Length: 135
Image (cartoon, rainbow, N blue to C red):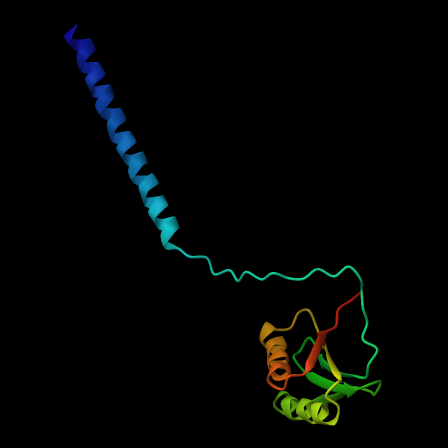
């Protein structure tokens, strides 16, 4: 009889240490998950039901897969330009016609910083900007 009671007591001790371990792990994960904050940017994007095209004269900025900048006005042939000269070129265009759109044609494999550079220049000079995409 004493042997059965002793086995039950040992089994209880074995289970209590296991439940303590599980409780401590659960507590650790709960605390760790509340300490980390996600780095998400929540953006409420509008939905478009129709595809629209700009009919106005457009200045085009091209960024190829190598990060080379080219610019064109209207239907002219694109001319290569240095990245540092882009702001001066776009501000000159904006001074000539403030209603003109600037279309950004960027390769999908370029660095995001190149796109942000053009968007930042357009924002600083209050230019109307569109990003060209495939149909």
